[in-house]
Image 1 (tube, helix red, strand yellow):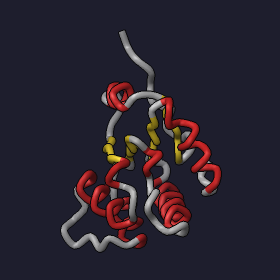
Image 2: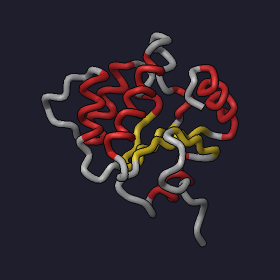
Image 3: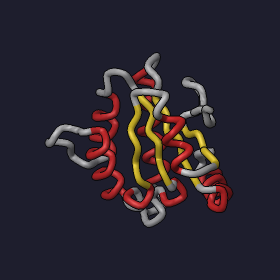
Length: 142
């Protein structure tokens, strides 16, 4: 028996996922390349940079700036999908300008990597899903 599938490649840059982290990881096992990021580690810009660098194994000289993130992601030879677990926590403790900055970086990376796929799937448990959607809309990401 197969579970739900990930959204098709070439879809929106930010793709909300209503359901458990386990179901998302099960669906993700059928697609590569992919990495997962923990929302609890993405609450600040510094945490986001550290988590992304560890997950995607950025080089030791990774600078932890928006420009450095853009460069490191744009260097992924096959593009890829990042699964953000508990995404309602994304940049929750960061200044208001950090989410638009992240979104701009991700949009640039997607353009640079085309035609290779690049997307974020933002997982939230059903009880937090509306919080995620409202946050994305408020920040211009959904």
